[in-house]
Image: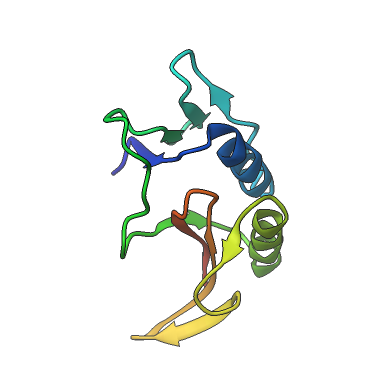
Length: 125
């Protein structure tokens, strides 16, 4: 459904350190910074990117917005979460773990990246 997701970031180098670590735990290679200073993680199924806003204003997180990354195991989700904490991210929401509701059972781990964007690791049980 999606070709790409792009988030705003004020410090591309801090974002690269953070996302290289968290996406590295999922098996993705380091991001590439292009000639315009944008950071890209390109896969066969889509692109995840970060950029300073083109309007020159500071990047800000979307209130109520979350980008989710699929994980194969809860252990991988825990490693993803720890990599984020170790590389400039902060925890948010409940601690990583299994949540149930509406007939669904999922493992979720939430982080805020260095720019405050909310991301999560998700494993459908």
